[in-house]
Length: 252
Image 1 (spheres, rainbow, N blue to C red):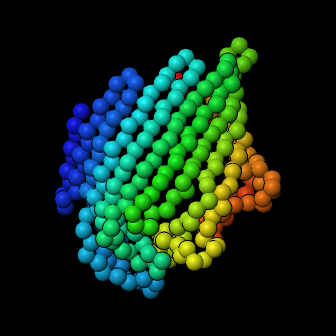
Image 2: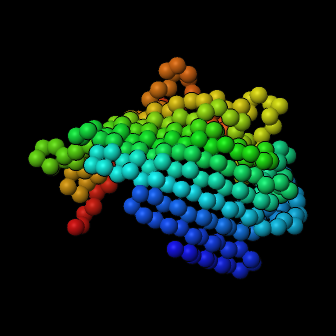
Image 3: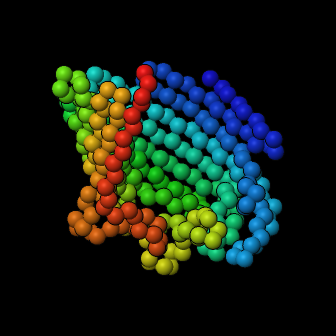
């Protein structure tokens, strides 16, 4: 199937994809204009006036599908090439790169269950080449293990388990509050290097007729062994905390 969408200003999105029982294959091409903020800004902190071209992105992807009764495995690979990418440099100034940047991503989405025990995992590896203006961790992994099923003659539907989020070390983008944007961090400053860290959350979701109840303890592993983590330079992640909520539908 081939789809194309246009908007004013020369922006467009073109998409071609093929879907079958065992594989998804696709190609996307996007051309999009710079934002008004990237073009012109005048305030006490930053001032600029730019004349940028459209950013052009081409991506091709392949996704496999292996679905059985209790096993679902979806391996995937994608390649993306971006030209004339606009980013904020180490001085928090918008800049358009004259060089292209390439992303190669390989990943796997899996789900396995045995009776009422479920395990889900989404892991991906990203390799970036070309201009050093886009930084993400090479390895990113989100997993969860939980119990799910009805109790008390199906009067209660319960899900309880753990969520795990891990990413490898990398030079993360810094944040400029005055500009309300992330910008390219300076690699000469070792503090901009964000260490790998695992965040574990425990949760309980329950449904009783039309009432939905959730309980969540975030960052269970705080102080085991590290006291915390940094999500971006000078900004720490959420400490251990407790959340709860109720959603009750009073109609059928």
